[in-house]
Image 1 (cartoon, rainbow, N blue to C red):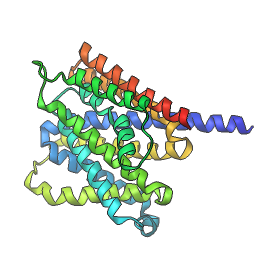
Image 2: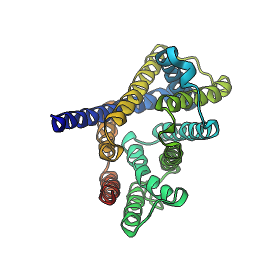
Image 3: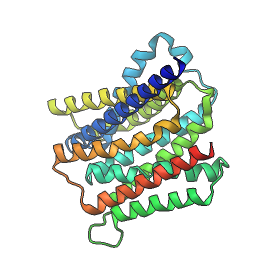
Image 4: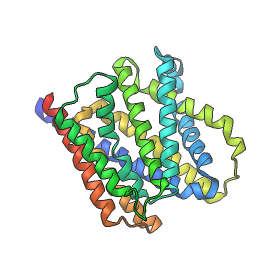
Length: 289
């Protein structure tokens, strides 16, 4: 019975992880559609403010406990890094195909492995090094520096991956001592406050379609966060990590369906190299455990 229960919990966690990734890609597609209507900055503000309002509603009965943190400095730093990662990625998807941006963003797992070795003292053997180099080669295949298809716009998703990796390392540094709801609360709070101070200078009044897209971004962004939290509460991060690459499939579908953007052969090849490198690093980490 225990084996069946463990298997059921694992399968539930996997389904929640895939649902979270699905929600995030829908949010990204909504942001790509919204940015040309009201601008990237206001789109970013809508994403954070909408999620913050929903989080406040969900944690209202225990807001005082949720807002209590042992590491205010670390919470502020990781929140700013996540905001920067979102800003870079939203800028990137407003300029290049969603599939290309998602593939480049997918280098973040191996960047986290590299950062953990440099800043957290985790071991970095030759096999992990090979995985990191392979992922960077995959990114170069996609952006092809020096070729006629290269654009500076492709660097935004890479900047997003770097900022997100730093955010993940700080989150790992916090460890289990902080409630996940506390971290989620400060992530939304810091982003909302900073962006709200600047958004009047970029404000464009949304039309009806823009408000619908804002609602969609808020709903799916928050649902994705909720599903992700529940997934990691029911399954190990190392077991769930490979399923994050489902995002590349979802992104390709939305990119073709809503924006008539089809990945070329080089993008597909680069994405396969990045995914292969990420899965290899994941395998080595589990093997070491």
